[in-house]
Image 1 (tube, rainbow, N blue to C red):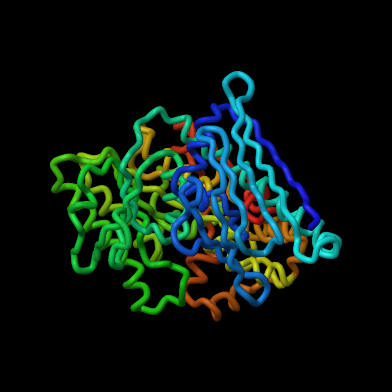
Image 2 (cartoon, rainbow, N blue to C red):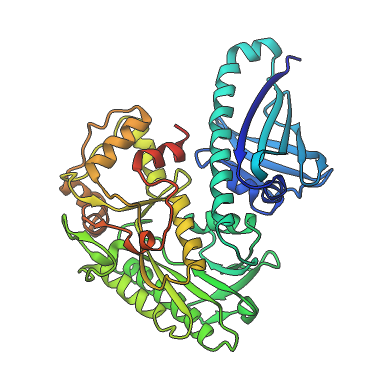
Length: 455
């Protein structure tokens, strides 16, 4: 069996124990899986203790591949090792080392010894391909590790109990593991029967809400609401979009107002759709609301959250959240990879966007920065036109972008949704985030796309 080796190291300004703790907390697996890799766990993630096992599932061509692994060695505060029991490799052994570094810092070293199926033939055929995948994967892992440790280290605070709604959505799926790897405890409000001690049932339409969910909670992050782009907007769908936001926010606000021990902050989602279609106008938090269905939904949504007059409340107005794991970017990837991408309409409409890591970073900032309250634009520092976005994505994917979608075709395909989401122009700036010192992880579009796509 021909053994191959891969190693990548990262210097960090925190001690080795902090790096070890981050890796062994709940959520580390989810934080470290690249968004372009459709990997999911079958069951819970393994605890970092000798003998603990887990199974990851991912597509390999037309079939699902199961990768079963086991923690084979642990040296607390310094190192742990996992080995493949069965899966795509002939052998796999991954050692995660956290070594003391300079000036009180540390060095993270990922060392992998592996073998490919079919021995030398497998290495000759697939060796370079596998090594490139490892380079992309560990480059992403190290960026996330450094970024998350920096964000958590910048806040000198005790671990918090954070209640999250919408934890199964695009932002919620990333937020929960980000918080738990930072040492915080996350409770989830869910509509299904609770599957763990950290889940609590609620149903905003009926008013059901388990009161234990709010007992002693430090912060609430409210992200739940009907997906606005999942289908064409019929009258019934528009009611679902509106009412899902109103009912959930109203139920939570009423419950918080009735508490004797209040949370420190209530962070709720909103959207830049509140500004309507504003052409080239530069928009900040002081700009007036616009017109249209989404603008009215956002105004009503924020008004419900503002009924909290004795708790610091922040309404984050998100732009288009970019992630290869879901949302707008994920839906665009197939046509763009096939060379069928192109601008929509004139391409001159402005698109305000934010990388997924900055979306969860903005939430974290809103939880801890006491200066933030009221409306806060959660967008990257520089908006782009649809034409610029199209060309940038094509460049990152090395594909042409020569097939535009005329405005009439967008309206035929998507109806009213096209005018409010695809053709509307919102050039929004994150004035409040910048004033309070938020540091963007991915402030430019091309860098954000390359990070999300491993390019």
